[in-house]
Image (cartoon, rainbow, N blue to C red; front, side):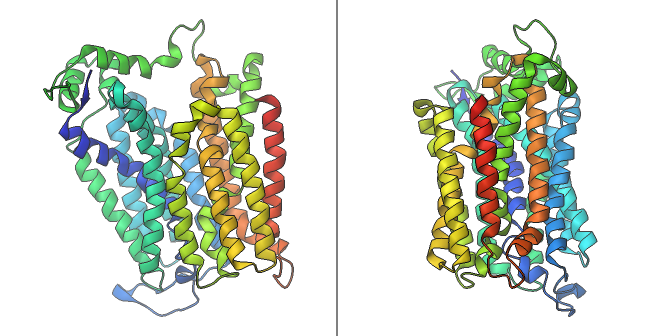
Length: 451
């Protein structure tokens, strides 16, 4: 049985985890710096760049949500890079896109420039979501495959947490640009490390490069006694995992249009679509994008610290599903998560409307906790359970597209809609969360009717 070599443990895995880490970083990078970035000052700061980029809430919503349009586009075309050219080039392109977007954002003086930057970072994020999980799976020896698979989600939540820490230091006019400079530095490091990294042995074997696959396997796998080896069975198993949707099936892989036409696929399509809608309509990304802004009106001094606590809780609650999902099952765990999330969102709405500061913090943290152990991971992992093998890839593409599209709508409309629902004197800022509670309830009831 093979395990990882030192080269894989301290080289390949950290390099590969930088891609999902940057995705998490991008999700939360605007959260704590919103006020500092969009202040009304026209003064120039260091190196002649404006201290701020003045903008309204709708414009800030645009630069936040256009990130998801980039993610949607690249997730739909990622296989055109990863399949013919390999996993490693896709990770390198991810690094280039993040570096380019971060460089533009760090020097931006207009909403348009920031929008272009966030779109490029979104392209990189969509690519990372597609390539990192499969790359990690294909390089993992069987005995540590489950643990390695968790690295993708852990990298995302640690990226979110890291950005929240940085917000304390750089949420000031002019200083906010450092958030993007750091992202540029990380992506540059990722690209430079990638020049010395390996390709997936499964991809090499699948593309008739068996010798190269054996060389790579010898670099990243070793036997129990620490001797580097190439085990043909391990590469063959990785190859079979890569081709799993095509094994023992009577028809070729389904295309996305066929998922809407073939009767057998309509129920799986409904289930995965409703699962993704419930996940996003819960309002979780509104909290991830805007938690500092949401809480600042109720508790202006403590809001950044609660946002940091949200990121910490998100990291901690990533672990429980690993240990309890087999015991309780996906349906029951998801049901607990949905009920807890609805209660937490209603609690948050009440607390914000009636200026219950401590309860606002409790509601936010409870919501993130309930979401993280069910609604967060389960919609992604039920697809093989409800779908014929030949349609798994197509349904995965559809579900990811729904995820990105809904994410975009919420990111774009949250701030303006919150202001409208809060009333002319802005005295009911929590009303938007009643809407999220309603949408989550309706979509979840529809989902559990079929699942």
